[in-house]
Image (tube, rainbow, N blue to C red; front, side, top):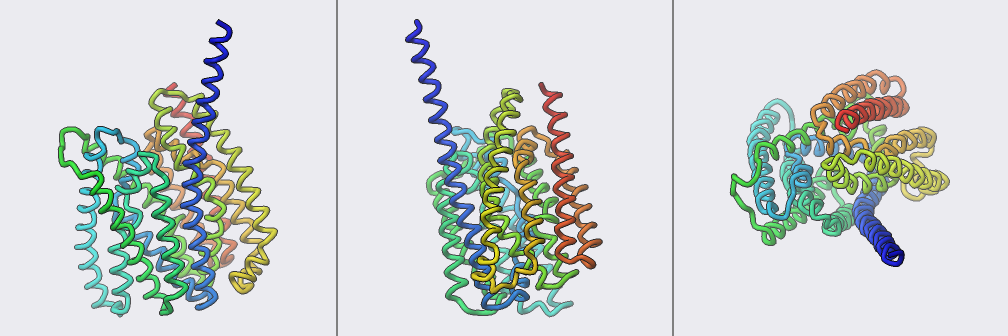
Length: 425
């Protein structure tokens, strides 16, 4: 009996080690894909600053922010719904539903965009922006397509997403290095190139998994509702992710936007660890919430916070010990006067990254409405602080506003999740 018990225990330990290795492998694929993407953005920023200067790079960053705002508004966030409702039996049905939602949204946005552009031409001199605007429209449907990302994440096939990110990252770097033109055309060409890669990914997925239009086997209303709330959350988060750059461009000028965009790229390099953790733990949280294992969720959360904190602070120390060299090598010593501000900004980012589990756990608990209200209130506060602080304090004002925003998000979400888990247990 004793030998049998020992054998069972050893088997359980072996299974635990195997599961941890599988999770680590998936995490490495995510870190690789996201990390390469962040590195390519850093490389692009370096070349643009060297070739065009901080002001023109600020214009490029403003165009990117405009595109991401347009993308968030115009496209349903189907990948989260795909992960939430995915089963092997329903994969073709979910793919069909996801594609239909995206096509309907694209058609509506296309009509509105054509009308809006024609009105804009009559009132403003927008003719030289046609190519970038067309690129934004096409890119908003194809790039980071929710059906493709959702399917591969639901299947935990992170290597496929990493390959797509790798190809796009390399293409982005090649274009900015070899294609010499003005910033507007460069931006448009990069968007069209990435859209081509993602369109091929969509075609390949549909060849492997053909769509099904059977409406009886899928709760269309529930799937659409979940996608809608995901889209709304993305839109409400725009003040922090993209819209702040547009405001800073107006309040402080393109040069400050350029510096801020570089800082964002730098923190994204550090944040790849937390991003990978967030993507993996969402699926884990969904399963644990279904069985109401809140002790298991609690243990995962604190382990994740400790892991991300140690990893991010180590990267931060290494990075800032090399800050002057990186600034000289990649940006021609244009950032040295912003070193202290950059250090504070990255420390604030790490504070938010330590609690990376807050957002996926909020979604897994189904607190979509409460999450939307939190984002609305906190991000309106953030925009108000940007308008108040940036004209007087420039980049330091942005960092102060961001610090307050992170504190509010962490405090409010933590209290709501704690309350929800106590009520359910």
